[in-house]
Length: 378
Ligand SMILES: C[S@@+](CC[C@H](N)C(=O)[O-])C[C@H]1O[C@@H](n2cnc3c(N)ncnc32)[C@H](O)[C@@H]1O
Picture 1 (tube, rainbow, N blue to C red):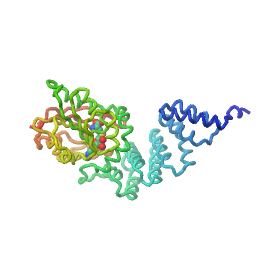
Picture 2 (picture 1 turned 30 degrees about the horizontal axis):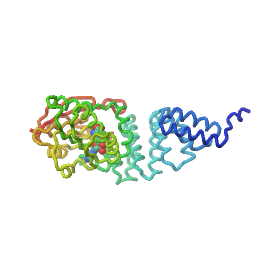
Picture 3 (picture 1 turned 90 degrees about the horizontal axis):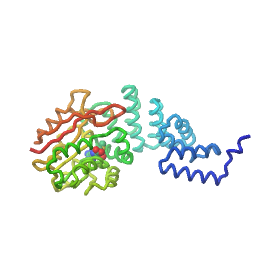
Picture 4 (picture 1 turned 45 degrees about the vertical axis):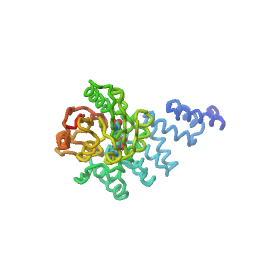
């Protein structure tokens, strides 16, 4: 009898959808969700409203409300990998890890191994193993490697569960894919993780250069990412001339938007001494060495970019799990022993001015401990 109250003309539904989509595009998900619900009351099968309401709940972190909608989308639009990807993330967030793993796998298969879905599966495997140990992910890891033996994301994940002494550096292809996907959300995610290394590095440099803070300085930002580090340094050393190097085009596009760099170059750090013909007063590498295990080759490149007296500031995540010089964690990131970092720096002709133990950021609600180094070419 109340049905007529919900009857809305097609024209009215179109107008409501447009209004809701405007809010959705402005990321005002709460208001968008209110209108999508109204549309679905009038027409429960209105696909665009259903899909955007599900994503709005997801963005609002209302995973309980999002789950049945994504389940419905997986049934009605069964070949779209994104619904399975979202559903896997919702299951992860609500602690339903076996379902999360199954849905993440479905998304990978349906997309024929697209990088966004491979990375989601990699993350789901990591989260599942964190709770249930390696045995909880063993069979999916093996199945994954059998199906995609040449995929760099799969290889990196596999090596992080089955240690291989020969694997001493992340593959460039893995890093590029990871950060191209991550780039648009990088700054927001890192802020959520209380990432502090850019501020810490900038403070160390400001203290070191306190007597000539206004002097013009050439600064090379290795693995510059979206430019968070240069942003902090520029605030403390106002006459910096910044060159940023990164392997990810997506991250470089984010860095460009900050308008800090004089030059941004897409290349592998290992090649920058061949590309850059100048030397720098300062080289920084914030949260970058975690993609490198063995450090001597990295430090040798840095050494070539600096004259005598040149300054190198960087962070490493600390190996607190065993006595190895470096170790690839299940998170697919390398951690390093402080003594190994010191020894490698000294062997390459640096003297160490600072080696500070700090909390670098958080990961899965836990603190990530590390070191901030300041070294000078002797
Ligand atoms: C965690 S982000 C840190 C970004 C930035 N330094 C910051 O503090 O916000 C690591 C960056 O290092 C870059 N990177 C890692 N390995 C690289 C390599 N071999 N060559 C160039 N860039 C690399 C990644 O693409 C990514 O942008």
